[in-house]
Length: 156
Image (tube, rainbow, N blue to C red; front, side, top):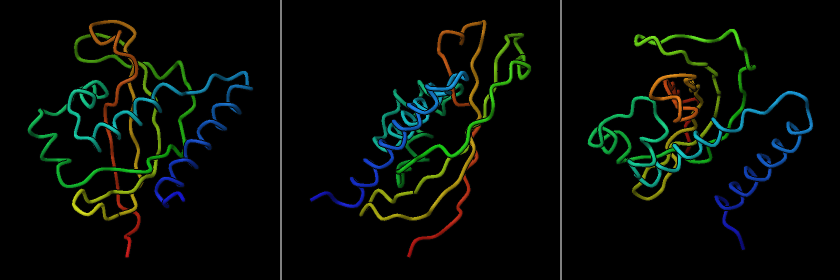
């Protein structure tokens, strides 16, 4: 018999596969790469895997800061709720003169206490993804740049 968390994860995976199938049938390309990066980030926080975490962030925190930030809790059941439309006019330039594209992703998740794996909060957030077209970060693909996470509900 499957436990509740396993069932929820299977449901999220099934919904993600359906999303990929449906968006693959349209003329408009889907925005899968940042979703993958976001799921990788979430998994690295859960596992406290600094190396994997730092591959997802444009400006990763120091290892000690990462461990302090996520040492007592992690995010689980992360799912994307909305993705900004692809806009070729949304090209920016950083202070070094390198051009990058920006896309925003909205998501929801649960914040879990590591000790006892108790659900602390229901969270909602937005993350900004950037992809450089030139410069030293161009080969890194989509990277998380800015993230806002807000508690929208408490568990009992």
